[in-house]
Length: 186
Image (cartoon, rainbow, N blue to C red; front, side, top):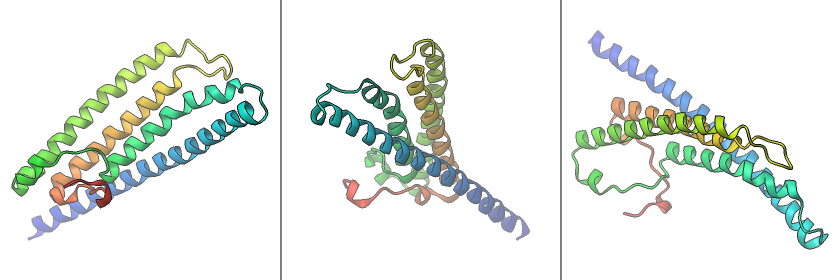
């Protein structure tokens, strides 16, 4: 009985740690989405005003800025989609498997996702190092910034997928995040 209690306690501790990791990743990504979303809207608004209201033909930095910020916005959204189960999935096989098969499928798929995104993280860092030698003419920022967004998003996606794998391994297939019903096709 003590062995069973210890195992449940260890699972509870692991789940609390995973919940904390997921909350931290979610907080980071929500902050990035909100801040980059505001920057994108302001830059586009300034560009529109300069082009059509003031009739100066546009402002160069306002046209360059979205190119640097957009990738951060998208990658943070990708991570949030993974954390909340709102990514694209085809559940045909999942629906016909027994509970243990669903659990194995979810764990295995997310471990593959984790490995793929770790590889993408490493590759994005290598490309960022190369792109760092070029700069944007108006902003003066290195062209590596979007690649760092890809690297950061890839690392957070890998962590999220690993967290999901561990959670489903410990608790079963019911522990995977379920996307919003209005975004699902059954």
